[in-house]
Length: 379
Image (cartoon, rainbow, N blue to C red; front, side, top):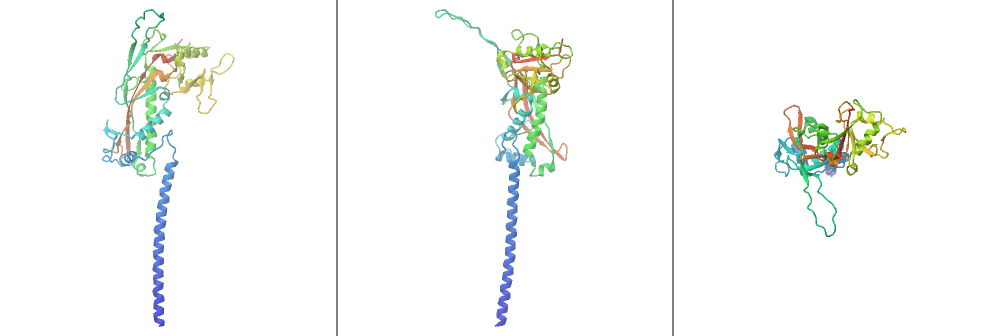
């Protein structure tokens, strides 16, 4: 009897140990699951805490996921071909709309001329626009008088020269393999910075050969709006062959009033920082500065009541240069660009780095030559 009891006790002890082992294993599995959930939540929290670029909210659409994870990170093209809008063109794939919007938003923020010019989206390489160069005849007649026939308006065609703007940022394979690396945000920012630098120079002084025609590369003339050929910009002299004369403020005031009153609504100054440094020192006869800082955060600095845009591609103050432009660039300069940015992934040219060759077709030209005026350094 005692033997049976002892055997039963031993058996129950083994059962208890076995159950404890099973419980410990279950606890370990549960802890592992909890740790995995915590890790996922941490990754989501870090992703959510990243600031959106200029208010553009990143989406987790299948199109973006497939493009970023499948093509940009791993170079797979098969899954892209089944997605609408992602077709190979010009040697690359058109980026999803969400990423393209991030690039466009950053471009608008850091490209000075793009901020103030007129921008149109086109679906093809060429873009043309007709601009009326003269109004129709008008007059007064009595109630019973004959109505004379009005003259026909005259038009000029504006076809902005364009070219393929490209950027070629590179990332290491280790960066691409890191799931925490924000490839989408990094690539958008890199492309936007490179695009902004290249197009900023072209919008100011581009030759028009496989690139936009800059407003400073357009024809110039001393003639007023009534007699000046269409497409040429009016300028006034600074009064000194090497800089400004003794009364520089009078030249700036003259420059403002060469612009028609309608264009002065929305006009702005464009100059580089070196020129702005000289302008900020200018005073009126009573000792007041012409330049006034913005009194409210986010408001631009002003010169003679008009905002100042700093464009580093504008020339410095030197003989026969045009260091200052004043005008309504929304009416005066046209930027035409193809809507889609294309990207070609290149892991072979510069191993172990992966290059992302991004292209976008951009054109530009003076639209209304009466809306932009220039100051030339000359006697």
